[in-house]
Length: 191
Image (cartoon, rainbow, N blue to C red; front, side):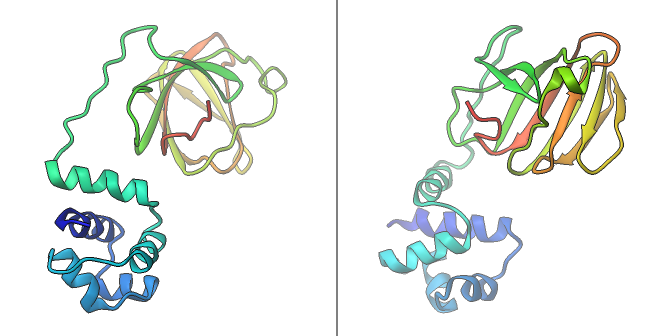
């Protein structure tokens, strides 16, 4: 392990709003050990490293990715999506195009969705996936159905932030519409 390991652990800890004592309590690794690792003064054995990874809810690969970011500062990554680009995918009973599909270890999954389902019957079962999501209507009108709320009509420019673990459906009540859906995680929508 390198000095970058400590920087990555510190970055993850601070992102959760945790102090050293909280991470120590969650992982069972002494505060003094975590502090020395974050300062680059000490290395971790495998067992303590795995306990910290579990407490921070990151696998070893995710920690290595953050080590690389810590080594190089900002990643400078980018992905350009031209109209019609991106691999097709199904989302909420509709078709869409994945944006930035070539980037690995993303914290967001953006998809431009062509909303064509005109009714819940045409939509099929409600969609659900891990995390939270954000929907912005780009064109037309979308009716947002949820397991927990009454249907909500959204016009172009309207948006909703929602818990995606609850079932939801996107309906185009008057004519086909287009929306941007951004979900937490790299594989929120599956293949």
